[in-house]
Image (cartoon, rainbow, N blue to C red):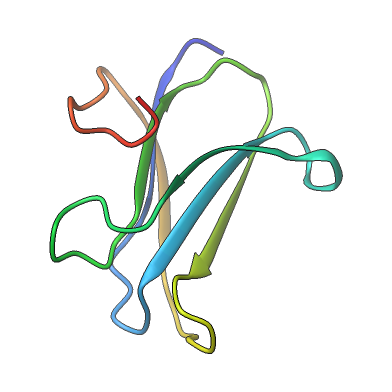
Amino acid sequence: VGSEMCIRDRRSDDFNAYLLVGVGFCQDVLLQYENDNFAEGSTDARVSITAEYPFYSVYINTFAPGEAGEYTMQIEQIDELPADAAGN
């Protein structure tokens, strides 16, 4: 709680990623943040937040129906939120 966090899909070449972050456990999640393309021309998704709750659920989906493929996800603690951070 109180830490700056950056959650991002790490450049899936297979599909256009859509990232959702919610508060709580899987069965009782309240969605708080979402991002499709964090930079113009990008298919990557990123959400940067200040953690206000002890538990978050993170979901990566495809932007368009029917897409599928491999992806990687990275969650890291950062010193400061970027000025253009989704979730600010």
